[in-house]
Amino acid sequence: MSDKSVPNNVLQFPGKKRDSEEQSSQPGHPAVPPKLAPAKGRKGKAASTIAVLAIAFATGAVNHFAFQGPVMATDLASTSVDPARGIASVDAAKWTRDADWEKQLAERLAAPQVRDLASVGIGHAPTREDKLHWGTLEEYYHFSYSEGEGHNIKSIDLPDPTTTPAYVSDRNKFLSDYGTLFFSDYDSAVLKSVEVSHDTTIELFTLLDKDKRPSAEVRFTLDNFKRLLSLKVEPKQI
Image (tube, rainbow, N blue to C red; front, top):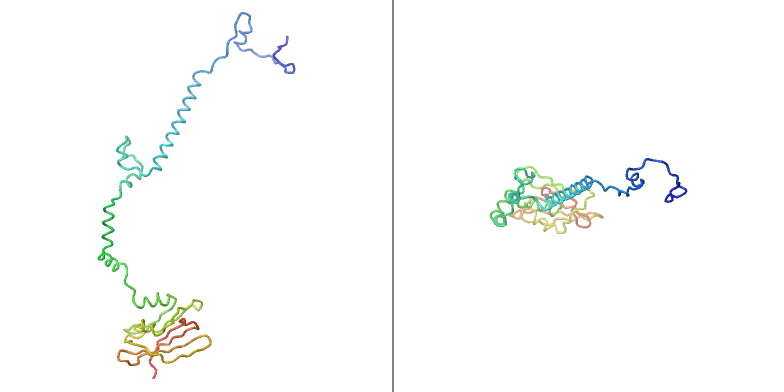
């Protein structure tokens, strides 16, 4: 006898019936509802949920303390955590800023006596030669010196021809500022001669001492824009 609840095109294979189905199929036995899931399965799901919540809580706590800044000693004292077992950076975080102390230190460093002492220890005021080499001539030139106690500048040259020369538009002022570097007893200078070619100008100045006696000569070689190509100190010519 075929089961009406089963479609005609589905073949039924014989199999062992469950006890409940056997009891329900027997006459005089009421149908038994299927058993509910055991309580042990529900407890396992609850435990898993609690574990996930615990991990989430721990992660949030770690992020909170990691991004809230260093843990101070007072923070450790207010908790049940043993300070000796804190993170390694706790000891370095015990220092706190003292605004009054920083203000006093800044005022002391700004005092004139301290500034003078610091300048002596670090460097010195630029000399006239420093100003010539690093300022007027822009550090591009090579200096050579005469032998002897005077240690005067004997020549100034531009070693790299591709370097843009420095302007020396007023040679009289140049010698007034730096004449003692070429001749120790320098007092003044007088233009002696000028030679002009298609791309250079040569100017020869006589250096005078304090008694107005000619003592040496300085030869400037300039380009057409009055930029210094070279300078040479020569003995006085009769």
